[in-house]
Image 1 (cartoon, rainbow, N blue to C red):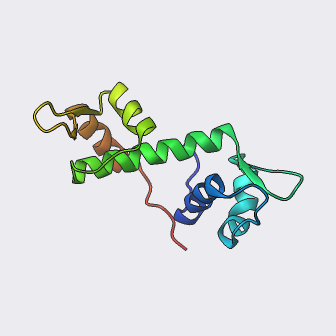
Image 2: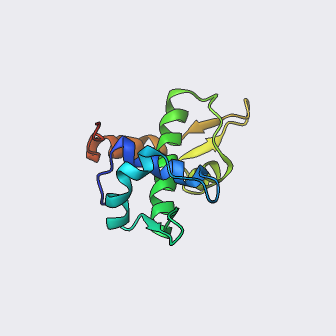
Image 3: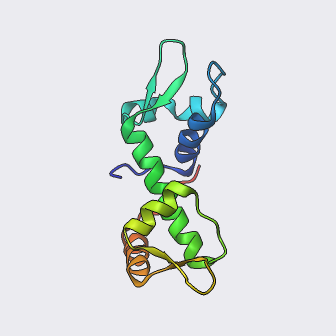
Length: 126
């Protein structure tokens, strides 16, 4: 993720994934569309709607993984979505505790989370 996206821009990406076909884009999507199209995270279709590009899907998935890792570190009872849990499990950032059956963050996951916190720029807020 080379782009520093604002919270509003991440929200616009999330809204695009949930937007029904043929529906008008929300004000949030419209407000952020010019920049998101410019950095090629979304594409503007002929019918006026927007769709995520492959890099947009990747950016959104990475954000979901980071948010999931933070959530598990704060609360082991947090339930991750299937793809996020699978990815974090394959990367050995989380594992299932044999006694409780819940996801727990591993030492590698804590190290990764500390690295993310140390190198991340705070999100811009408008």
